[in-house]
Length: 334
Ligand code: KG4
Ligand code: ZN
Image 1 (cartoon, rainbow, N blue to C red):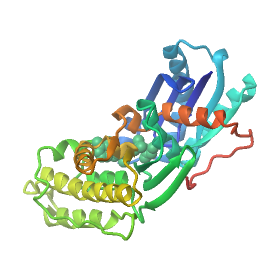
Image 2: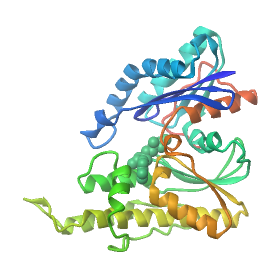
Image 3: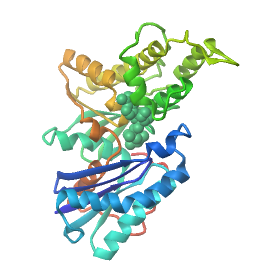
Image 4: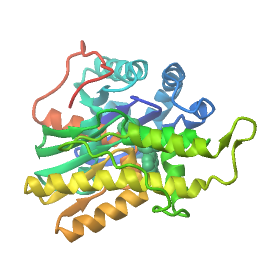
């Protein structure tokens, strides 16, 4: 069966075609250039861009998969959580296609999609595993016992990890999104140059707002009213030291969760999973403990519709579909 996956929860308009659980096409149209001059995603602009981009992106996904719309037997769409106007565009399109073609449709939780992205690259991964979901909107640890069984172990009490990257980039007057830029700058900096705080929340919870404030205070020492950021501020060192603080906490808690639950597999998902230092250090620490690490390729870490298509297909296989009265929701626990 062919599934059309649709993802419009934030600033990527994405469509994918799957044949059963195999991805045939995975098209992502980023709106970064629209939002960049505002230093973050502007919800109303995102919704409008989704309206303009979605049909061309769906057509491209069908074309690349060499599949016609008549061949599609299931539509899967992100319906929560995300920007409500942005979600509405994808959900409305999915409903319209499903209704017009008289085929089933499935609403998918965005976080579930991110976690299942690992199964696209590693079909034999199996359960259980510990999943670290770290993106612009979420930072959470799950004990994934089986498909559909996500036990939340802990989550951020304030900013998401990706949000912290984006906010720190803004403090450093870098462009949006900050994650990839900080990742690149950090490669030329010293991670031990500045000791930023590691927020040690109890259990498996995270907190990144104190770290962001510490970076702001550090940057303020090198900022003057007239000249702005002074050249004495070593931006690469700030990037590397900030990144080290985030990565250390993410890695430590994820490994701890695996050991304490006697689970020997870890999946890292979400946009922050694209971070090169997180990838390297998580691998090093997992190897030390004999834990197998599953890191989806960059294209499956960032928002995409292949992961939504797969999640939808797996739900459909279990007889779980959504009614046409399904409404998108801005926030929803997995
Ligand atoms: O999963 P995603 O595409 O969208 C959400 O669901 O939020 O994640 C986007 C987030 C942004 O905050 C972005 O700065 C961050 O992922 N990100 C990174 C990197 N690439 C993307 N953070 C750190 N290092 C990266 N290389
Ligand atoms: Zn996402």
